[in-house]
Length: 330
Ligand SMILES: [Zn+2]
Image 1: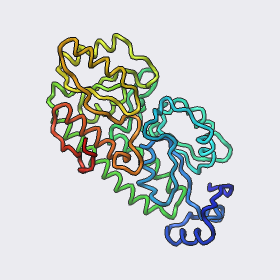
Image 2: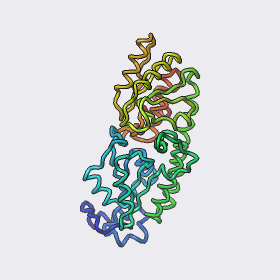
Image 3: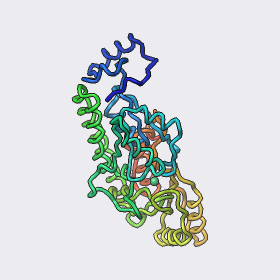
Image 4: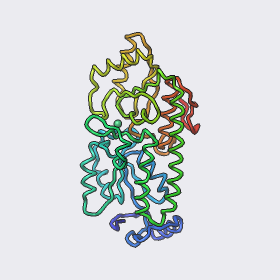
């Protein structure tokens, strides 16, 4: 249902006519309800979700992403402006599985609203066969396994077709291409991680975001904090990880773009006291992707960066600028 109440002052009659001609596939039966012939507004929480919508919907939809690159989705509280955008949206897509822990109430209320707005969590739509249990609730970090995350594409595809039925063929074609990109980065991950010497195929990060990554690409994974970022890492956990690093001679551990580095420093110092040098292997994207408009601001770029940094820092073989030769030079 496209809502006539939406204001689109930037589009006059001329604009609408041009857009209709430009876009080819129209808004179908609901066109009359949208006086400006305007594009459906899709509001999403994270960059990972935005990337699917951008790749499938292209110019046919408007996308607003609530959480930017350095935002921790576990802790993010919706602002008044976010709530206004959510109210205005034609379609709301989010990760789910409690990733957006402080937004759940807002999103659920929105889904129960009377205007029939579509509000859908992508990861929660996955079959339980794909999901890993966490402590207390299901691990939400499914996007770090490209093969699992690819299974959420259909949810977005169905919703876009429902919104713009005349564009279904185009969305189908886009989905085929996007699936191929995800399959390619998945293959790259499997092949590159396998080149790390087995004894150091150990990924230690700030919080427990990489379990799906570990399952998909064959690397042992340890997070200092639990699944969410609001729990204090216990001293015992730090000590256990220091011992692991020293015993396995792990060459590098990793910080995350959205999480504090304090605990990582505790591990480096702890290993040093036992005579083992471990370095920071780089900053990984765990709960966000990079800046929009850059390669790192795409889903594939984000995963390429993670896979390439992990592989190279742990002694494996990967090209310095990644799968597509597009990673920024360090
Ligand atoms: Zn997380």
